[in-house]
Image (cartoon, rainbow, N blue to C red; front, side):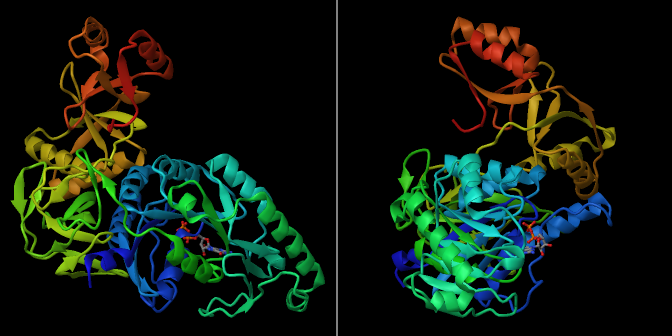
Length: 528
Ligand code: GDP
């Protein structure tokens, strides 16, 4: 098969949601359609559950699962679908942000009763900023929830999306009768039988057809006619280009648990979702059809077995063909590496592959060469953009609690940072190490892993920082910049790449500083 056909055959996407909206359940039903798994319950939730086991055990359990669910691939209608796993827990939001740099589109799952929740807002915002095409799935229609129109309004207002329903619910909760599929123009009646994986749909090309009354009763039929008409007059019609450019988001309704409305979602997804897309690098835009292989690391999993320092680096292939045992350039190290056992993913299994194509994810065994954001090419010196660090929410000094083990601590911190568990800053003033994280849970993870994987002990010390900003002066040699560095010396640090960072202790001081130093830019992410 030609490269272009391989590319067109692939759809790589992520499912994002607030925890409990139904991401795991939906993923599982999608895999069932692909015949990749046989039974319900096969896909494990990657959630951190508090309670029964200790938190550390829970973290380990979660890490185990998250290796298994990092990439779930299956074939459907001759299309190779790669689902990239995105943790829903807010303390792992950075992981999800980075994974979003490797997807070509997303499906957003929303709970019909809870509507738009906090994590949905954050994750959708990241997708919106990057114009990632999104399809919305409103889940749990078998339960009482919000009115469809109210919910669509809420999605438009809170998520700043422009929606177009491609299916419409007939009733909900106790009265849920099914969905009218605007995309395919048919009606699917809800029976509440989750085992039914092939749904019978009834063609209704025209809603005025009296057959509809026989199917769902006069009252429901009239309501559907009114609502469908209203929906079609209030919302813009579907437009492929607007969707692909991230300016229009189709909406589906269903119940993942009952495997209802999922087939409709998947069929439409296969029809409209983009194949692997061109990607911007620091030197140029790279097209997937280019002959030469390029790819980048978006995720690293390390030390699942503490006896072996094994790491698996996840590479998204952007262009060309990736082949086993062929030397590729690790651009940051300017060094050629070859990989004898690259892993591909199928459902929950991984296996060694000889060739992979754009859109695919390969897992490469690594002994410490890779760091998130690293680029591999066939020789060209380019680096992919868009694996940014955001300002952490929490900051603490990290101290060595066992002077005999300072080497181990150094190494552990170094590797955990490469993996993207947290961000490390060094204070300019005294070189003290500061760990910045998105959630407080990360400090426990780091402490636990340092001890169990590296034999090092650490303690933390609180530090009052509101936000980290990456600093870019218009002129490095200006009087103003020199003054800034002098006055703010106490608050300056370097990140891992040696970029200068201002650690503002409050929103107020950040504002004052920004106002005072007009020729210095304060960036909220490390990519600018
Ligand atoms: P995640 O945290 O987003 O991965 O959510 P899960 O898939 O683990 O689902 C959270 C809970 O919602 C589980 O108890 C599911 O059984 C339940 N759930 C998922 N989909 C539906 C649905 O369509 N209807 C109902 N009633 N419950 C659902």
